[in-house]
Amino acid sequence: MLPRFPPLLTGLLALLLLLAAGTTAAAPPPLRLGVLAVLGAEATIQEWFPVLRQLQTALPGYQVSLTHFDHEGLRRAARREELDFVITNPGHYIELEAELGASRILSLDAGSGRTPQSALGSAVIVPRDSSPLRRLEDLRGRRLAVVSHEAFGGYQMLWGELLEQGIDPEQELAGLHEVGLPMNRVIEALEQGKADAGVLRSCMLESRPDWMARYRVLSPREIPGFPCASSTRLYPDWPLAALRHTPPELSRAVAIALLGMTQGEHGMAWSMPADYQSVHELFRKLEIGPYAYLRTPGLKHLAERYWPWMAGMALLILAWVLYTVRVEHLVHVRTSALQDALAARDASEQRMRAAQEQAEHLSRLSVLGELSGTLAHELNQPLATITNYAGSLRRRADNQRLTEAAVREAAGEIADQAERAAGIMARIRSFSRKRVGSCAPVAPGEVVQEAITLFQGMLARAPRVEVDDRLPAGARIGADRLQLQQVLLNLLKNAWDASQELPPERQQIQVSLEEDGDNIRLGVRDLGCGLDAATCAQLFQPFFTTKPDGLGLGLSICRSIAEAHGGRLTAEIPASGPGARFVLTLPKSDAAPGPVQDITALTSDR
Ligand code: ADP
Picture 1 (tube, rainbow, N blue to C red):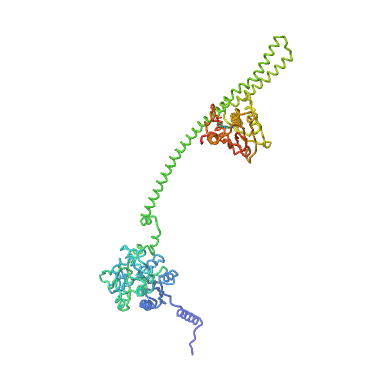
Picture 2 (cartoon, rainbow, N blue to C red):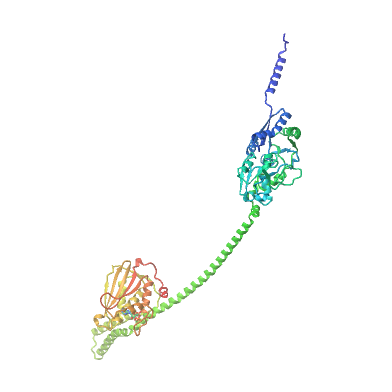
């Protein structure tokens, strides 16, 4: 019969059984190791199996796992906290240390003359017999097979070594042939002729007698006690590192467990962590890993590296500044020279303008002078009439025959004649006055009429002047009235000079006014002696004259006046009949381009 238990005791028993069952059912905590695979999956597992077995044995309460990765895979798994410990090469370790806070707790102790502090080197191998390469310097211009830029033993150690010897493998080799892991692909690349030399972890060559027979190491170093040939200095052995999240007691347990391994018993041993300072120095020199920031160009860095370029640039900038200053100076000098020249030109223009005004004045006086003989005669007529009337009045008074009607008639006649003489004098005075030109819209017909009146008023035996005015009513030109009169008077006087010695039927002058687009043409035609080709060529030159008492300035001044008004003065030999024709062309007032130009500028150009 089964013993009977009180209900309370039965409950407690059931609870204990449940807890016991729960404990046995819970999975053991994980202990996850990640290793960097350099030899391929199978070889890696085989290589690190002693570690796995040691931990399983020493820490039975843990679910120990060992997984292999490449560089990036190991970094990623550690970052995701999928691992508790990493076993990797020293270079990769210092990267994980800086990046993820990995902290070494042990270093491999490979034994056989290798200490944990001096265990790893790289061997540059070349075909034993066929290669002409002897030393590391011979690698210049050659193709080199490496595992990858990230491989510590497979490239970075040699990189540092070459830099120390003044060879930049990135620049001076014919090419870096990256073969990837496992490392024996380097041998394949050499065998396939893809590279002239290859980089292996030291001691790898010695582990394969068949390779040893076919390859030799470049620049092997003499390292006391080190059993293998190395082309580089030695670096500490691989570390085992705990990650930031790994519990310290687990690290301690793992360290104790692995320190218990021995070469003899397990084929692998661990020791207290080595000093990885030499790896830091290498990476600083290569500016990679935690020191990659050194490649970011700081000012000092730039100055050190590119000082010849910077000095060149500074020189260029200096040259440019000097050039600019010189150009500025030259511009300044030339500008002031130009200003002086302009001032001198202004002064000379001023003088010429004064001289021109003087010449115009003289020309007018000359016209008057030439006409003065006939002018005296013209004035004589009213004066003689006045004298006659005055004499007649006196005689009538003497004879007591002075009637009121006679006095009135004589006084009226005297007043008329005096007025006529005064009119002649006023016109001449206004014409001969020295003045500066001013421009205003004028009716060409009116100016022509005034000029003819003045002309005829000055001549005793004035020729007939016919006017043919075809201008529309209201046509205007922008002109200085007096200067225009002067031109017309000159043309009329020249026409008279050319014809006064000829028979009366040749002594007539025709003045025409017509429109020509935006211009108005004033023509003065005579039937006089005419122009020959030689005269035509010199007509407008100053001081050209064919007259014994001529000045030769009239036409030259007239042309200057025409051009100052934006017009022109031309001479024509008429197609039919004798004589000459002078045409003054001036822009219409609404088409005139602006104020009258300074005639001195035009005359001085000629
Ligand atoms: P000047 O009348 O003092 O000689 P101008 O400059 O007025 O000066 O004239 C220059 C020359 O042009 C005259 O001497 C004359 O030979 C010639 N000339 C001017 N007008 C006529 C004309 N209508 N017919 C023929 N020759 C002329």
